[in-house]
Image (cartoon, rainbow, N blue to C red; front, side, top):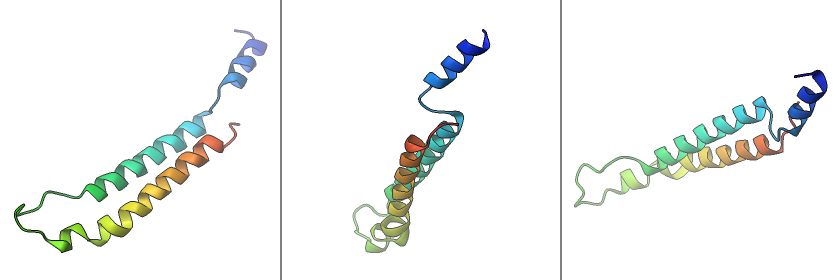
Length: 82
């Protein structure tokens, strides 16, 4: 492939390598946030334990991770490839 064709192919790519790295990182943060929000199985499913449902991890940390993941995805999409 000559230099002109290679430059044309590179210019036609919508995202660069750095964009894809940001996208993968954002998806990992999103997955972690959803995993933390889901929590685990209750020890006794017949009894409601508010400490498990309303824990800091599920109510505060997980939503913050999800928002951070979406922000990372927006950055990945908007960032201009080099």
